[in-house]
Length: 401
Ligand SMILES: Cc1ncc(COP(=O)(O)O)c(C=O)c1O
Image (cartoon, rainbow, N blue to C red; front, side):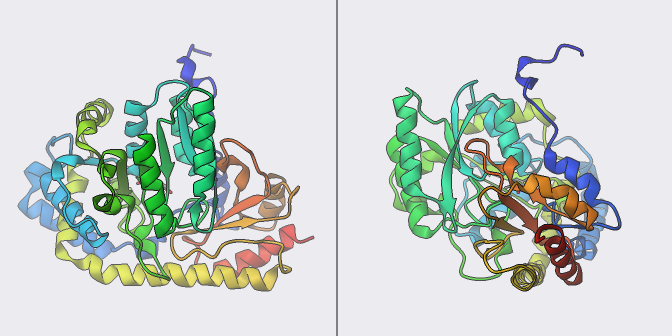
C-alpha cells in the first residue's frame, strides 16, 4: 500500500454508501438513503432558469467566480434566510459552499486540531462524524430525545471535558428534523444551548438541511435567529444549510453563515478546496429562486413528505407488534429512527432484510461513542406510498420472526 497520510489510518468507506449499492437493485425497496424524491424536483422551473441563464448571463455563468459565491445567489439565499426568521444577513458573513457537506469539511478544517473534542448528538449524522474523524477529532456524544439534545447531558459532557483539561472545539447539531434521529430541538432548549455556548465560549454549528420539510407543527427559528436576544451569542453560532433537500442535490449548493472573524479562514480553505462552487449552478439557482416558483413547490413538497412519513408510521403500527419498533414521530424531514429491544443487533438483520427485498440503515454507525446496536434508520423520502406500505410489510417479515 502506498504510504498514506497518518490521518487516513482509521478512514473507512461509508457504510451507508455500501448499502446504497444494494438499494439500487430493482427488486429492493430502499428505506436506506436520504435521497429526495426525484418526482419533487421542479424540472420545468430549473430548465427554464437554465435557459434564462444561457440567454442572458452565459459568459459570467461559465466563467470563474468569487470564492464566497455569486452575489445574486447570495442575495437569494438571504431571502431564504428571511423566511427562516433571519431578517437581515450580512452577505459578507455568508459563503456559498458545494453542498453543506463541504461546509462541514471547511469548518472542520479551520477548527479541528488532532485530539480536539467535538461534541455531537447521540446519534449523529454519519457523514459529519466521518469528517470529524478524518481531522482526528475526539467525538463525545450528547444524549437526545424527541426534543433534541438533553441539556443536562450537554452540561455533563462539558464538565467531563473540563475534568480532562479540554474545552470542546464545537458542538455540532442538526437541530431540526435530525438525521438520523428525526428529532427537533425545542425552543426552550435552543435558548439554553445558546446560553451555554456563550457561557462556555464554545461554537455551536447548526447544520440545517431539513427545516423546509416541515409537515406538522409550527416552525422553530434556527439558532442564528435567536442570537439577537442573547448577548454575545452571534459570536458562537455558525449556520449551514443547502438546496439539496428542497430544490435538488445535483446542484451541489449550500451555504455557511459564520461570525466575521471566521470568514477569512473559511475563504482560504474554500479556495484551496475548489476555488469556488460552480458558477453555473449558482446562476441557475439564483435565477430559479428569483422566479418565486419555490413558493408553489414547497407546499407540494411538504405535503408529499408528510404523506410518506405518515404512511410509514401507520404501516409500522399495522405490521409490527406494539412496542417492537419504537420511535418519536417526526414532524418533518426524511427519517424515522426506530428502536428495537435492548440486545437486538440490527446489523445482523440487514441480510435477512435484503433477502426479503427491503433495505434500511442499521443504527450502530451513527454512534461515534457509546455504541448502540438496536436502532434502525428508515427513510421515507424516496419510495412512493405503495412502496412504503409494501416495504414495511417486508421489513416485518424479515425481523418479526
Ligand atoms: C444532516 C446533513 N448534513 C449535510 C448533508 C449533506 O447535504 P449536501 O447535499 O448539502 O452536501 C446531509 C445530507 O444527507 C445531511 O443529512
